[in-house]
Amino acid sequence: MSEPLVEAIANMREPEALKLTQELLESGVDPMKILELCGKAMDRVGKRFETQEYFLPELILAGKMLGRISEMVKPKLVKDYKVNRLGKVILGTVQGDIHDIGKNVVTFMLDVNGFEVHDLGIDLPAQKFVDAIKEIQPAVVGLSGFLTLAFDSMKKTIEAIKSAGLRDKVKIMIGGGQIDEMVKDYTGADAYGRDAMAAVSLCKKWIGGQ
Ligand code: B12
Image (cartoon, rainbow, N blue to C red; front, side, top):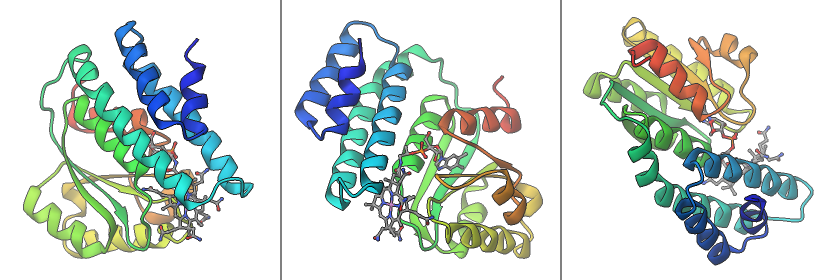
């Protein structure tokens, strides 16, 4: 019954996508279900990009739609899911990579689940993470990346954290399109998370809250 939302996003019909989101929220559909449908739509967009049916403008528009839908869903999620501030997490996309849609979903989910999230942005040199750890003193650092070259950036970032003497002060999780357990081993991270809910589970395990 809620597949029309997937169709509207995947076919770049933004006004319809926003209207459908509003209707789903008003009819009491679980906001998590709406986010799931957004993920499904992004899969379709990604496939159309790969087959060159879509190009960069469509990807950017899809990202914006997702941002707007997240903003609409957020108040409802915060209301439904009990929120206590649980601990600090810093998160960012590593150097050379500007993909941030997945990272923004992770930021959003950590936020509504009660973590104090500091989103450092995109294309971040290792030193930015080191400086932010010193300043913010988070319990968890999240590294996001969608390009193959992000593997090396993640490894360098973790080495820089180690060189700064901060490695035993933080847990490090990584994630993004091409990331898997092998990349986790390669980079020296503590864990890999497949999606935003996995990021929430890792933070709950490390910081508490479950
Ligand atoms: C959207 C997109 C773009 C957009 C990004 C917009 C933005 N603001 O992010 C734009 C158009 C800018 C773009 C640019 C490029 N892209 Co691009 N892009 C994509 C695309 C289609 C979707 C990625 C996405 O956002 N998915 C949506 C999210 C929600 O997906 P998700 O993976 O389910 O997200 C979850 C997890 O990843 C996880 N997660 C994410 N981060 C983290 C962090 C932690 C800590 C944890 C635990 C979990 C976690 O949680 C998320 C939420 O549940 C992918 C193809 C694909 N099918 O994935 C290509 C893709 C990633 N891009 C690719 C390429 C090559 C590029 C460009 C080089 C293209 C070019 N020629 O210019 C540039 C790179 C620029 C750069 N330096 O980064 C390649 C990468 C190939 C590779 N092996 O390196 C891909 C795979 C497409 C392809 N098959 O060719 N791209």
